[in-house]
Amino acid sequence: MLKKAKGTKMKFAITIVCWVTFAISILSGADKPDYVIVDTGQNQCYNNSGKISFPKPGQSFFGQDAEYLGIQPSYKDNHDGTITDINTGLMWTKVVDSQKQSLKEATITAQTVRTGGYSDWRVPNIKELYSLIDFRGKTGKQSPHSMYRVPYDAIPYINTDYFDFKYGDTESGERFIDAQWLSSTKYVSTTMNGAETLFGVNFADGRIKGYGYKHPNGRGPGKEKKFYVRYVRGNNKYGINNFQDNQNGTITDLATGLTWMKSDSGRAMSWQVALNYAEKLKLAGHSDWRLPNAKELQSIVDYTRSPDTTRSPSINPIFKTSSIKNEAGQIDYPYFWTSTTHKDGRTDGSQAVYIAFGRALGKMHGNIIDVHGAGAQRSDPKTGRKTFRGPQGDALRINNYVRCVRGGKANLILHPPVTILGKYPYNQKRSVNNFDSNSNQPPIRHDKHGPHPPFPGPPF
Image 1 (tube, rainbow, N blue to C red):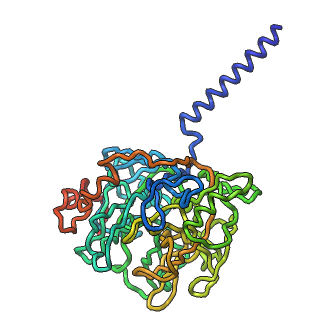
Image 2 (cartoon, rainbow, N blue to C red):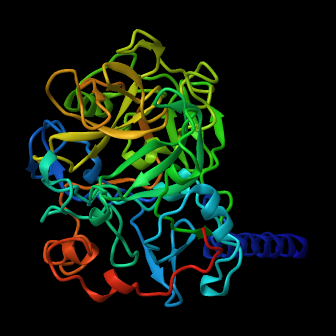
Image 3 (cartoon, rainbow, N blue to C red):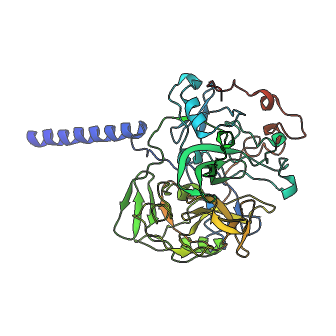
């Protein structure tokens, strides 16, 4: 009897120790993934042409971005020129230096930056940089004749409650959307018929593009493409995938906690049909599949791969991807829909975000070429016809492929989340010109002088 009592006490003690260990691991964040996918911020629903109330299950347009509430953006201003992303563990510089820099210049400057008392700043890679994009942003209504003035309804695609922002310098001949931020990620192929290319995020129009920065025709060092720069430090594991084949038609990324279809839809479809396809999908014993949002889908891009260098899509070969014949007659790989609406153009809600896992084609001077690189994030109209559009003649396909996702921290909601007036993005209409010293409105002080001194660094 005594032995039994001692055994019971021992088991109880072990149980207590296990629970305490588990609690400590939770409180310490030991179970927190290194690669946290932060929500896009999108909090409104759209049909093919405008804003709508939140659809219910079974209704048209159900299952879009705003209806799945993920890990919400959360930042801390450290009041020393740095901003901490609570979710990702990345720390960022707050300031925007009005002097744009090349990758070489920015890499040298990073070694001299001492913001916040830290000396380990670096140029972010494209996945780190894209973690900051917020799809409550809006490019604004503009015409080809108004590209040199910020639209009255423009909202930057980054939370300006925390991060300083600048549009392009229209006084020096730039368009207002020339607000590309630099990443350290080089395209493994080339764009624009041979130009060495860097990926960047445009926080004025909500896109990832590969930008030709060095051309084989010898434009010279003074003509090298330059960008705005925001430096980062911490969490060197961010953006690194850890895929596991579940042997049931699905792939789990252990780094993010998301589970994906191993194969894609096998056919192209409209955005509305894609939403329905995802919501009706039953695979591997699960029926809670959804169309991924822009950040979820971009998380599985492999920027070390491309059709021209690895003869593959820009995704880990653990996935199976359909091949297509593109507009130039080449063997290529599809654009893939996301559930995220892109508020770009004259009509809110008429376009949706896609990721190009093959060449991001455009038509320039009559030639169809890779203009933005495999791994670019652009958008297509939700309805219409195939054509080419924009300064680089982006190839519009209208019908794109689908790779569904499940899991993660996304929770289905059937009503808009609570919003706080006076905070981003609801404080933009009255102050959009505050971000642009080139508008015809009086700029606030930081447009002229900056809230912090410029980064120290060598002269260029």
